[in-house]
Length: 466
Length: 171
Image (cartoon, rainbow over all chains, first blue to last red; front, side):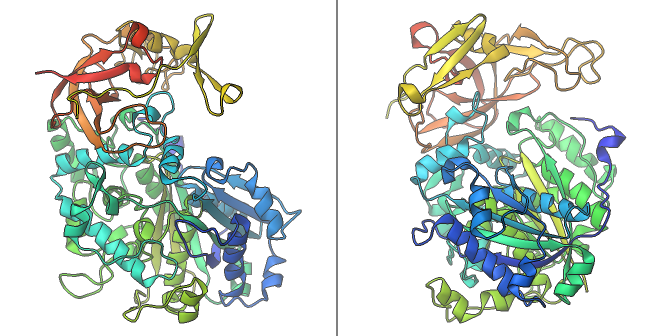
């Protein structure tokens, strides 16, 4: 739709609140031959039940489950239909009901959405959300073709068979439209890969420089290798439950709101429309932007922005009572599959105005420690290392992001990133220069799960429940 | 490297059933082939092989968006998403526009039929509401705004896929 009727903009209204009480994950690797897929899921499941300081024993918690929502991006990669049944059986959850969710890169987020609504509706008191991807059965360039099956098969897949080539024109257009310095994109890669150095789960941690990113090989102009995430293997999990159960399980539950949006996977088919305004925005703030767009034959959301992200944020903020994102949110996990998608998202979620995304990154507000002032950034992004630095085992990604925000809100970054035994579990040594990325007393965080060139997006607001 | 981009893939086989083209997409040899229909969009793919670029437009005067005078859709779609009525076919004339966005593809995924490197381009055409993705036959440096015209793989050269449409720079 390019115009909405009032009914389309109804804000979701749950019948009861939903809480997150635990998160689990594996580490992530480009290739993970040591374990079968369901064995990796068991790793994440055990961490979920055993390591989140829940007040009940793991098997007692398991005894509370009513439903499972599973995320798997592509049957192509697993080469297995009904993988959900295999995993469910392996985790010992038969005969409970489960559903498999598939919305491309946003699969993890959508699995959270389905899990949350199962609790919000009363169908379930306690829901397991678990996702995975095993992208190492095929060579990288065949994997790229599989992913490019998420472009339009009739009109676009044959034009690259490599997903970076569908993001690259957006990067090009964004760059020209807003005069973006490519060093800003490179800085995003440096930041997120740098944060990954502190994560035992990370697959692509690295201390890079802007010059190194820009000097790297080009995947699809203007995107360089270090600006793109990699094939990944692993699993992540979450427990969602009712309020009553949440406080039985932990004194530190996290309240969760989640909403989705979607948009055509053919970028060029995105017809111009008015920007749906977030609570803190007015038509007036975009008057100049519309005028500038007209000069450059631009359109919203066009190639520069993600309408689905804006729609999801529009709903989620109203559900959660977020008024001014930069003031009300303390951290965010963006879906930085490519540097450009991270950059574009800051406008979509209203951390800054559309057209000023570059300035937002250079302001330093998206850093743990603002490089200009040495003070904490206002809303650090991707302290987990993000998709660029840590993981994009697609079906797990949106769940992993929520898990990282959840642990930050609980003040448990160090517990889940700084324990040398955790590093040893994955065959790694905790770096001597490891530093904590825990932010001080965060109240609310945001996680963006994102598919295609913005085809499906979920926006999750997580909020301290104590 | 040659100045002009060429295809490395051969033509896809098609079978006609009435007015509809069904394209063969082999996976695991003859027994593993997918038979993929172009359905109501068959005129588009046929049009390319005849050197014509066809789009669809909504002609329904009661459509809340087009009011019966919609811009062309390219890629075409048989039904209007705004009023759900069948759309009508129209030829894009002239089949030319300017580069709205682009990328230089250094390497594509397995099975890519276009010889790398090449420009994948998004083309804005006057009278067309959407922006069509295609590829450029030229390899020299380009910029947003450069004018391009459509070219077609016709007759024996036709692949019977979207690759039958490509663009060249207008000098």
